[in-house]
Length: 82
Image 1: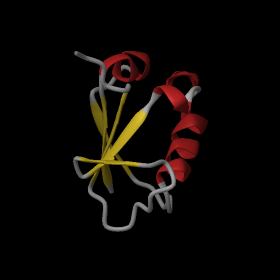
Image 2 (image 1 turned 45 degrees about the vertical axis):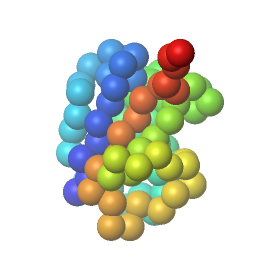
Image 3 (image 1 turned 90 degrees about the vertical axis):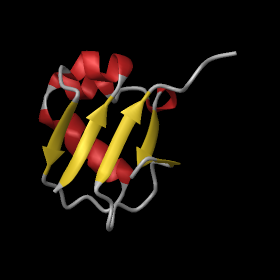
């Protein structure tokens, strides 16, 4: 079981700030594929991965990162600022 957190517009599209997900996904990309297949709102949120970042256990990571041992996955748009 993995805690999945959604921030900013990702949360708005999915309609949840977080959820627990039972998954056998090996990588972040596999998890995204499983989420996309759930409903249209997930497909919309994960339609453009270039507009997303991911953190595993609060450390910035990549979509091909393994999920073994990970407890928390967070999806959010790239940070902007100045």
